[in-house]
Every structure is written in C-alpha cells, then in structure tokens.
Length: 380
Image 1 (tube, helix red, strand yellow):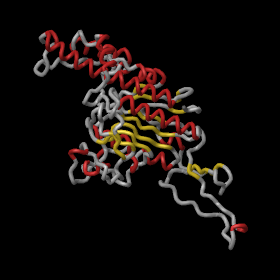
Image 2 (cartoon, helix red, strand yellow):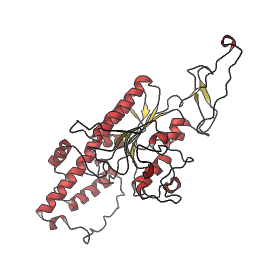
Image 3 (cartoon, rainbow, N blue to C red):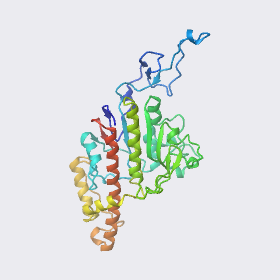
Image 4 (cartoon, rainbow, N blue to C red):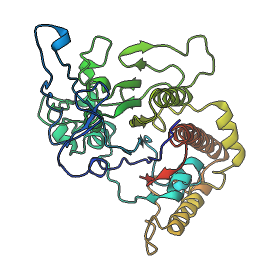
C-alpha cells in the first residue's frame, strides 16, 4: 500500500500540474551511475536517447562506463487513480442525489469536489477515447463505437500515433501504468488473440491490462484478458465475479509496486463493466438492496425525491424546474398493474445492487491506493 501522500481522484489531475511547465531536465544522483534518474521536461515523447559520456579504451580496466539515467517523475509526483463508471446516470448514486447507496464515492466527494458539467458523447467508445487522449473523439478515430466503425477519417476506430493516451504520456515520464476493466477502444478487426496489439492497452502506454475487449461482457464468464492472453479464472470457481476479481488484481498490482519500490508513482485506470448491461451483481447484493425497498414508491415520487436531493446538494440550480411527465411514453406509477410494479422494482433492485456492489469494490481499490490520506480528491 502507498506509503506516500498521493493524489487520488475520479478525474485525473492535469499532467502539467504534476510536471510543471517545460523547463530544463533534472538529473538526480551521479550522472552515469546505474541508479541515476532524470526528470524530463516533457516537450518530446518518447524522450530522446541520452548520449554516452563514458570512455571506451582498448581494455575494460582503462574504460569508464556511463549508464543512461532512468526517466523518473519528479520527487513527490502523485499516484493517480482514474475510475470510470459505465452507464451510471446522473441521478443514480447517492453522491449526486440518487437513492442508491454509494458510500465510497460519497467519501471522495465529501473531501473534494463534485463536478456538474462533465460532457459525454452519449456513446461508450467515443467518450472513452476522448477521456484517455484529451482530444475530440473524431480526431482520434472514434466518431462512433468500434463495432460501427467505417473506413473514413474520424470513424475508423484507430487512435493514431500522433495522439498519445494519458497512459503513454505518464509511462514515458517514468510512471507505472495499468488499465483495468472495459476496453471499448480496440478495433474489431484486432479484438482477438491474433492481434495486432498496437491498439490494445499494452500498445497504448499501459504496461498491464486486466479486463475485456468490447462494449460489454458477462461478469460471471467474461472474455477476460491478462495483458493480451485470454484467461479463464472462473472455471471451477462457482460464484466468481469480475467486479471483485478485477479489484483483487488491481490491489495486488498496487501492493506489488509499493513492496518493490514505494517511491515509484503509478497511474491506475479503473473502468469496470458496471453499470452497463448485463447487470450481474451477486445475490448477496441483490438481497441487501431489495431489503432496503428503495423503489417501492414508484418512479414518479422517486423522481421528485432525487430532484429535491440534487437541489439540496447543490448539483443543480435552486431555480431548476422539472420537465413535464412524458405521459405518451411512460405511464404514471399508479396506473400500472401490481405485476408490472413488481417487475420494475425487481429490475431497479438488480441495477442498484450492481452499482452498490461496484462502489464497494472500488472502495477497496481506493483504500489500497490511499494508505495515509487524500490529496485533491475530485469526482465527476
């Protein structure tokens, strides 16, 4: 676990805040020594090769070795955790006024900020491509999801070499990087064990990948990869679930890095399949949420409750007015049959259980990353 004060958040800090403005490179330790490091100015990535400054004579005794300095972030560079929850909805978690309990995200929000103007493209692949590159999704080949890509610029599902991901930027600045969970940014023609793998996380600046490729996956029997190797850890293990398994692996990755070298900062991109379909929480979580009876009053009253909660939290303006109920599309709750209500409550319970379960496992990862205290936590 992290022995240093680190920055923890659901929206990663700007790279410029970590490395400062471009300036002179700094070498730490004796130049040429095997343990010397260099903090680069970041204007050129990957960093240029360092010239050999030793001496080569006719024999080793008269020669002088000179090791290139290992690229490392500046002292005190923070660990960064970026968590992306899929298809959640602004009014779902308690963190933003919903009735579904997400206590782990609540803790982050209470210690930091709730951003209320996060824009998405309303599609998985484009939003994710924009998030990890910092660019408009069309400029990195993702005008649509990868399964609907076409052979036209902006829509071919290929992130060009001139568009580095944040994983690549941080890796080239000396960070250790990992991608966990959903990857919906691999072109469909490359989404198999045959590759090519240049558009997979391991080819885009992430040194470790544990997750699945594509828009969704069963959480009980996912198309799971360890880097680029297909794995099947659920075989012979009834009850195995990816939401817990990826948290276990991420915690192991963080602990291993800190056991080896606690001064080595890391970037962890954590993107569970939740709450995208299929909704696969464990029975324990479904029973727990069902017992809370969160949705018994129906969607009309629930809408009013969430609206009031959001005003109380300040995530919507106090003078906001609810839009009219869309009667032509959705009946009022009191117009439904008892059987219909039972069905919709069950569906809502399963979705809520999936989100609450995910929040719990994300909390375990947060605990592993933040051993002492949080610095500048944010939530989006």
